[in-house]
Length: 288
Image 1 (tube, rainbow, N blue to C red):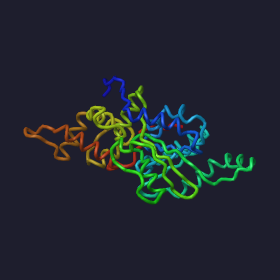
Image 2: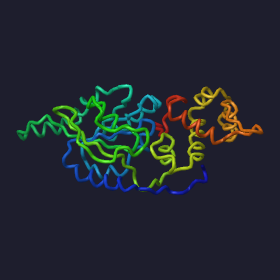
Image 3: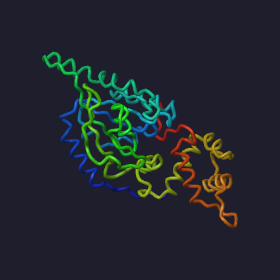
Image 4: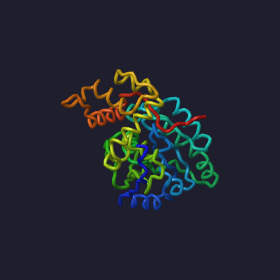
């Protein structure tokens, strides 16, 4: 992984179109609901959005909070607060903090509503733009608020292909958008973080490189999780190949001649990592 220096360039046509449509619809919305993955609050934030969204009121939802390190999530919420952005940790599948979302939308829009009232404009209706990169849970969020299946859900990136207005209640409408990535990953760390959690397709980066990155990260920050999951005794300075061998032998990933089937170990480890088998992990770290 250390020798993997290529910049990753890709910008599917539907994503370029979605960006243009978001820019066109921006003046129709009151607030932007930006859904990030709580495991990668920085890596899952599209840097293009800062320019696209301008100064629109924003509420950040750190989804999949049950999969993230709770202490790190608290630090990230504090970080956003220092930036003047309200953030809430949620788990849409488990309904964690879901009931707090609409009150927070109203809280973020309180100043806007007061200005409207001072001008004699009284309107409770809110139109919100839902944005986020692939696989962070936008469709799950919309279905949860609408309390019915109105947005297509998939466990692979790129399911939502078009923009749709969805009526959640008399007072709230949401505009669903496709997950938009940016044209080029300048940071190797960001690319591997997104690949590790499955927010970019597995065809984009070699799985071996993704697995190498993820194992070394877990070894550094969540060593006990690694050892407990596979019942092995890895130390902070254990060689990467030795870790693969230990996991492979423990899980029966052995070929004829007693050789390790590394492809099986890689797939096994990434599956475990993406399905919370190694515990709650946050890849973007806050240090303060």
